[in-house]
Image 1 (cartoon, rainbow, N blue to C red):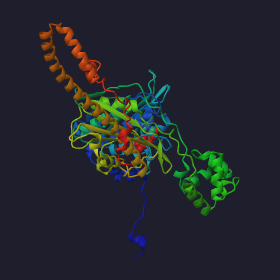
Image 2: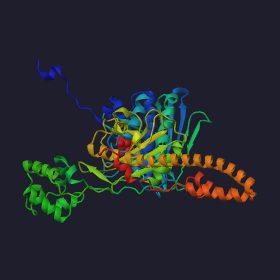
Image 3: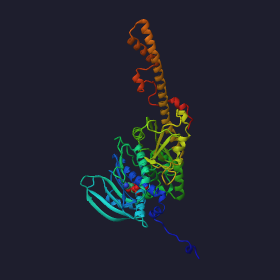
Length: 538
Ligand SMILES: Nc1ncnc2c1ncn2[C@@H]1O[C@H](COP(=O)(O)OP(=O)(O)OP(=O)(O)O)[C@@H](O)[C@H]1O
């Protein structure tokens, strides 16, 4: 018997692969499936709005379908740029079809999320997805009912029509029926939206459950929005042989000198010449002449060469200190918030920026460790905190240096944005250990922690001063009474001169001033250099 008699080989389509392994994409059980569906739809909606500076308005309506409590209908609607009619079938019916395979910060990366929703619905309730979409300035609204031909990885159009766009609507609305557990998923979905609002306070959300009065509205708290990212080119340090081959195929005759300048981020004439000297190649050689070994050497040298410019951060869209502070203030309701957006850095040719917020007091419940909120490209990471570098770094910090004694009402928010987020697993829930990113996270958290220390120190001083003021005033009153008795001087005049003396001694302008926290002299921006001396170096 030959091998082919005992072993059967076959190919698997991408759609079939994800139907079989849906847990890889987060659809591991009925609760998680609902959460993941809403998350995929919301993230697509946010990408379709904020990337184009449209303030997002997102509606999500949940209902029980077919009288059965395990069939859940999910409706999601946005006011985004919409999807061109002819693209709708592939967008929802072909695994690995996306507009986001670009060097630019997006929430989406794989070209999978929307298709997972369709696959899951189809596998559990055998119902098609209903999609209605109108691109910007479109006269028509395109409507489709779609399923996926799983073996071919192709869309199946169940029905299709075009409706007149009478009111100039633009955006996308989706309805899908799938098996799930809404009751269990509800809290997680609410938490997901709450966290999303923390980093996107310019968005508004309505989540309506199956019961009429089960409505959560998250309002827009600011009209300020971050600048959208531009689209970038690969950095020479981030390439591999396959990418170079693909670029060469586009135009094999182009001189290698021009090839470098046209296709890569931050390569000007001087650097291109220096690099070609470094590799030992002639600038006018057609790039298609690079043969196998030369090609591998070329790529190796690209990684070794240390004179490339740093990757540009124009492809990123950080939240910004003000918007982040507004989001955190609105969601966590703390006594005080400090934020920082660090300068751009890079790892392996990929630009990244770390932002952090520290929220203290107010409605934050005291706990034994800082509460952590993690975000990557504005997506909240909810699971897998234990494997994440942020947890590790925050736990390593000696918080007593910052005058924090646990249990304390302390929350730390960390946002990492990059053209390539190094996720620790396919589930996109934790950030892997990349030393450059770890350093930046550490610096960002320390920076906001220093501001907290200054704040706590000031508050303590103010408390102390208030105490002194109370005691001095009490004794002052006795002195006033005694003096007035002895000298027969006017009581009010004596009282006001004693009070003036106390204020002068304590360097307080007025009592109101002290109570409204303006009286202590010090560095207003919170950047106390003295603080930095006490920290272990990174
Ligand atoms: N609500 C929407 N509005 C506009 N375009 C959308 C919307 N939903 C999906 N799209 C388009 O469909 C494409 C595919 O979406 P899908 O969710 O499958 O993958 P993705 O968002 O690209 O990546 P990921 O799998 O990482 O989420 C998107 O790249 C986008 O161009």
